[in-house]
Amino acid sequence: MHPMVDLWNFVVQNQQEILRQTGEHIALTFIALIIAVFIGVPLGIVLTRYQKSSGTVLGIVGVIQTIPSLALLGFLLPLLGIGATPAVVALFLYALLPIVRNTYAGIDEVDESVVEAARGMGMSNLQRLAKVELPLGIPVIFAGIRTATVINVGVATLCALIGAGGLGEYIFRGIALNNVNMILAGAIPAAMLALSFDFVLGMIQKYIRKIIKPLLAVTGLILLVVIPWSLKSLLPGRTFKAGMPPEFIERPDGYRGLKKYYNFDIPTVEMDAALMYRALRNGRVDVIGGYSTDGRIKAFNLRVLKDDKNYFPPYSCAPLVSESALQEYPQLKKVLNKLSGKISNDEMVEMNYQVDQNHRNPGDVARDFLQKKGFKTGVSRSGTPDVIIGGKNFTEHFILGHMFAILIENYTNLDAGLKLGLAGTQIVFNALLNHEIDLYPEYTGTGLHVLLKADSTTVNHLGNSKQKVYDYVSKFSRKKFNIEWLRPLGFDNTYALMMREEQAEKLHIRTISDMVRYIHQHE
Image 1: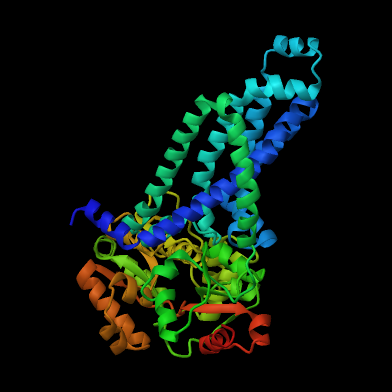
Image 2: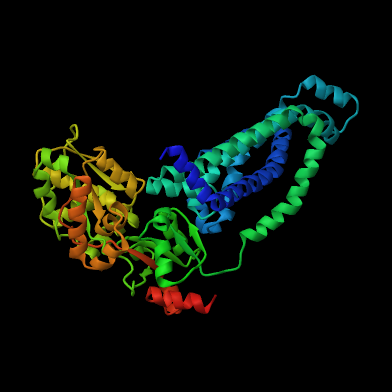
């Protein structure tokens, strides 16, 4: 089928969700913009009256805009929680610079002779501002508002990572799953919004002097009606809430299947995995879907809920290597299999903890572990890589990637290069198939559900047997993709639901079924 037909079919099938995301995107953009206008324009005017302070204030506003968007959202998360509130605050801060700067410039650049003539006519400072400076400076001021609008439409896509909704939801899910249709279903409407708003505001800018009064009246009405309604919606009543990363929401072995299997439904916000753990620690959500060997479980005192109905399959970790790499460098298999069974769950949790909580370098943590296990670690090469090691964008893969590289360089004459931090399973797996990397750590449960897309009959037949699942993915991965699973490393990083220890203890929740009963009792 033609790619455009696929995209069209996807849009038609998901039109309600796309419309919802578009509405959320517009609301986030304009609520933040209106607040920025009503604060930024007066601030710019004040700076023209206090010139000595203008450089400092404009510098501070400029520094705010240089802060990376995700870093700013992460900073606001513990202060304002998840959802639309921190998103609106972040977008407001990013909109301030062009509005304040253009207001200051628009009024400051009014011809001095015109201002002097107004003074000569006996106009007061307020009269000069209202009748001379603002009318002459309004085109420049409006250009700043136009710029801020386009900036906000783009930055608003990132707000999906903190559960604020918007078109970024599909973009980040699509990136995690390497689903082009999903990416385009979010990216195209976002681009169209930016172009449409810029075009409309450009037309308004041409006639701004003629329509400024009715425009201000309409804007004031929006401020009086929309903002209070929006703020009310941003502060909903407290409910039991879940935070989930994009990939987990869409995966066949992920959250949607889990809800059906255990028969429950709770309000869920989609957010970046790193921010998700912080949101749970700070009490902004009550349960998250994470990884059972994550170091933040120990660091944040979280309780992993027992999967008492055995929904999640085994996720034994093993190196996944292309056959072409093994044919060219057969020594890789022997070297990497040295790690077989050497890493326990507790050891992997501790290594992740050292990186996540103690902020140690993943390479140093990997080297220390190998030294304790009696491996050679003294050689470190810096030549052109013979073998490229990939990894996903979470701590465990950074550690394992370095571990593989250290072993390869110390037990062979090969140089190892790293391409870590790839966005999601499908992206790193496609990199392996396309020979952009030669190997990476993967999990048998992911191989079963995501890579091989095993049907329900096969999944039920394999059950929760680690060996059966490993044998199945080994056999069919070699047959279908020409790749090989080496021996498992020893630990199982299963998907898991987790809560804060004190809250889980207070609510008497130890298993997923306990959580479901609590939800049903409080619906």
